[in-house]
Length: 137
Image (cartoon, rainbow, N blue to C red; front, side):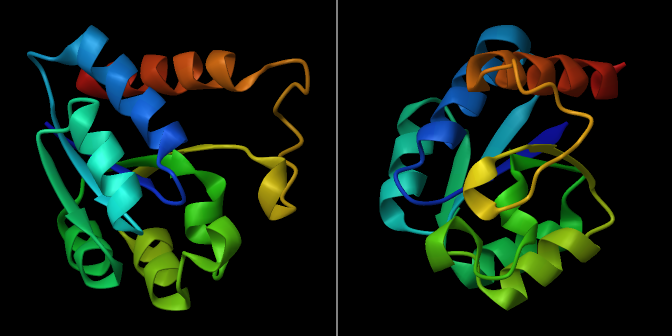
């Protein structure tokens, strides 16, 4: 299964996701890292992504054929990630037929009510990786 991880800025969140996925499912998945900038892409590639691309067009093109998309909730928000997510990218991700498993983030002014505030990002990433495992069954 090909898993698509999308991140921007410094790629720190994407790096944590890619690293955890590789630890748990290295033999079962291939990871495509899509960065909004070259720094994020390079960081995710270094963390173990099998394939990587940078920018708006790779996000738009690859979301059409993705089966599973992971990242922060800001990737479906036009101008998310401090403006790095273009409206075209947000639309392509949101309208993709792929299942999306997204991490909540208060940085994009979206508060997901079902998410316990007591969970830190490490716990949330563990939950995200667990859900990927459920998709592999």
